[in-house]
Length: 260
Length: 197
Image (tube, rainbow over all chains, first blue to last red; front, side, top):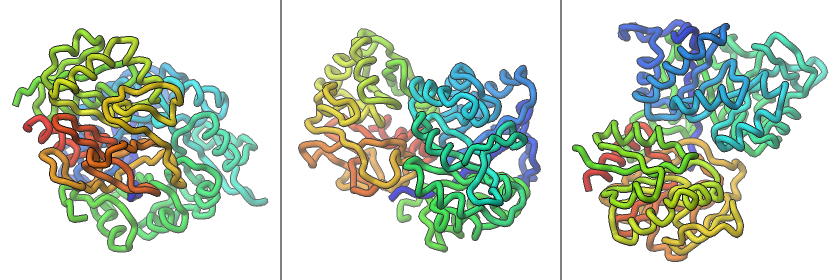
């Protein structure tokens, strides 16, 4: 059967990984190529780069990073952050990424998702959604890195994004992100009921139990996490071994082991 | 190893990823964007990402459909990946009315599972001995799967709502629904075995 995916996310600024990391034995802990290769070796199912570079001029640096990672890493690579046009996306995909994510640009112009899906196929187009719970119930979409409310309902936008051509959704609960106290399970349950495409849950992982809960009760198809891996509490390998012991279907970290 | 592999480039596929993976396991890779460039291939790889109809149209426009068919009919080593497997069959639900290459009798149908497309690593089981295939976890991205008329060509299966064709093997023809170039060390090992046999 299809396994649930564990996806480490690396924040990249000016070509460097900016969050802390436990990999003290790496000569250069800010090196995206070394970190991505390390995660692949530990059993990550994909690696995601979020480019938090403020300036558009640094796009060339990102492209060089993607190209270098693609030479070394043989699991899918997703790239998001600041991509605004089909040409932006094409450049990243040509450099070796398998998928690109768009957030604000898709809200402003859902036709961008349709044009990208026509150009690259839906499998390459991930719509990222930042959502915050409303006091009145449901969730609201925020754009511009979570700074700007849109008034849009997150589940409704998810459905329209899929109709527009999104092949996957990467959904971050802003209430839970960075707090490491668990994912917003109700949000992912609502999405699982609403859309047929895979949903990647992001925001809230503090431990293995949180990841198990979002993949099982939350019915998410993948868990994306940054802090839990970077700040040294867990390796991808430890997380997967424990998830398997808890009965969650994930690919064993040693994929040569065919007994799995 | 310096096996000579010709990679079919019809404009829309993931030629770069496949070229990097083949190079990583020691292959000398050249790219064929026209039928004439694929005519003398020792080993031919047809990678695949995209829509069945669009891929068939691109292959025909570039004269690559005939080159692939001649290569396979001559019994020379061939590897098809994802849509590169699906186009070997007669037709697909994804593009009704568009004929495939018709080299493997049968059709391509849509998954009826809750989640379509399937995206991620799925457990592949071999159903008979193979010099190249091995059971394990491989990366899939697909909404459709092949149903050959003759089940004996199926060499490996996986499950997504239904048990489906993960690999076809007929003589020197191998075609896989998953992406060995994106399946980590298990995928690279498979490519290495394909180059060695």
